[in-house]
Image: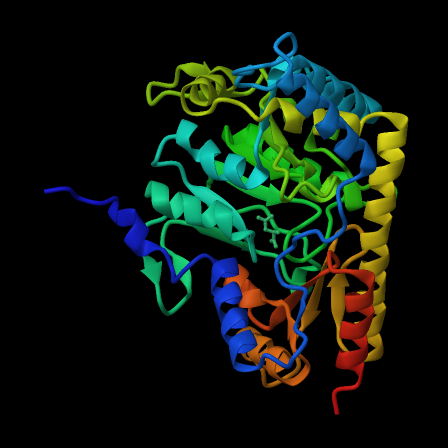
Length: 410
Ligand code: MLT
C-alpha cells in the first residue's frame, strides 16, 4: 500500500495566495461587470527592462547556432552571472563573497522552501509572525512543526516571534533556544525594516546558540533610507551564521522570467548529532547538483544584463515607479483615516483594519464594496490578525483608482 507524507495533512487549507485567487475568480464570475483591482499577491506589472529583452534575444540567437548552442549549464549558475553578483551586489556593500558561494536558481520561493532539506528534522524553527507562508509550510511538510493548535492558530513546535505595531515591528530574540531562524527584511508582509544594530543582535544570538539565520533579502532593492542593511553580511560575523536569499523577481520584474540566487558562505557550518562540523556550502552544492539542472542560459543572460550601467538605470526606473505607488497608497490610506506601516523601504503597505473587522472580513468588505483585492494579515500568521496588506506592484492607474475608491467609501 502506497502511503503519503502525512505531514501534508497538517497544512492549513490551501496556499494563501491560491485561496485568494479562487475567491477573487468566483467574485469575478458572479460580477462580470465589475473592474477588480488586484493589489493582493506581490506580482509585478511593468514589462522587463529593455536590456533584459535584448539579452534574451541575443542569447536565443546563440541557442539557434550550432557553434554557440549550449546544453546543460553548471548547476550552480554560469560564472558570468555569479561574478557580476559578487561584484555588483556585494562588493559595493563592502562585503566579499566568492563566486562559488553563490547558487543561481529559479526563485527565492523555491530556495527558501528547499533549503530545509539540508537540515535535521529535529531542529527548532523560529519564524517572525506574521510571515511569508512558504517558510512555515515547507517546515510543516518536512515534519518539523508538530501539530496545529486550533485555539492558538499555531504549530506546537514552532517558535513564533510577533512583529506588530506593539513592538514597532522589531522582533525580539526568542527566550527558548532555536536552531533555524527565518528573517525577511525589508519584511514581507509588513513592509518594515531593521537597522544594522537590530539585525546584529540576531547574528550574535545565532553565534551564541550555534543557530542559523535564513535571511530573505528579496526586497532589498526597495530600501530608500540610509543605514538600513541591504544584506545580512553587512553585519560582522554574519557569514558564519547566515544564508542569504536574493531574487530578480521584484528587483528586475522577473516574476515570470524566474531567476534568483542564494548565498551559502564557506564559513557556514552545521553539525552532526555527534557535534562534527559540516560545511553547508558543500551540502547545498550536493543537493543542487542532484536535484537541479540550473537556470536556463537565456534567463541568466537576462539577469546579467541588469548589472550594466544602462541595465541599472532601467531597473531603477521600474523600482522607482513601484516606490511611487507605495507612497500613493500610504498617503491615500492615511487620508482615508487608516493607520499604515511599511511602504517606505518595501513594496508592501501594512494597514490596520477598521474596528470590528477581522482581516478576512475586511478582505471580503473591500472586494465587495470597492472591488479591490488585498491580502488578509491573518493569512500570514496569528499576529497578522487585524492587519491587511496592499502591494505597490499594481499599475499607476489602478493604484490611483484604488485609493480614490477607498477614500470615497461612505
Ligand atoms: C507575495 O505576494 O507575498 C509574494 O509575491 C509571493 C512570492 O514572492 O512568492
